[in-house]
Image (cartoon, rainbow, N blue to C red; front, side, top):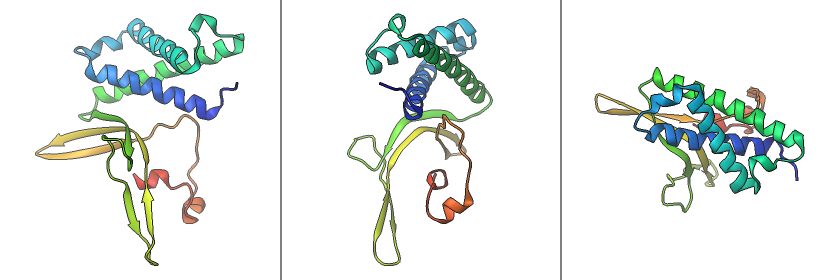
Length: 171
């Protein structure tokens, strides 16, 4: 079996979601600023992912290139987690939801966006939002939608003009 770009994206999303849930719900989230604590936490999340999704333990990673890949992904995930903590230290936004379904049967889902077309048709936008942050001031709640990207992607006005590659614009 191979572990391609989409699998790497799923891996990073899972590790970041689980880390942000731990960080958000921890009585002392500042403890994660200790590099040893952060590395141990991310290592544990990677180990959990390997067991639950890939079906093997860290020590059983074979061949060596697979172990190298997950070691690199673990280091990258720790860097991203560190950056996220730094972001929240300097922001009044707080994470409110992770992997939020849009338009679905899940009891957590928010309604899909429905757009009427000129010819009477209907377009329904649905999917999953990686993370939703909120900030409330003077009774007004501001919402920030976060979409994690695990690979470089260039914006193309030409593709958007053709109705393609419009995901980020919909947020």
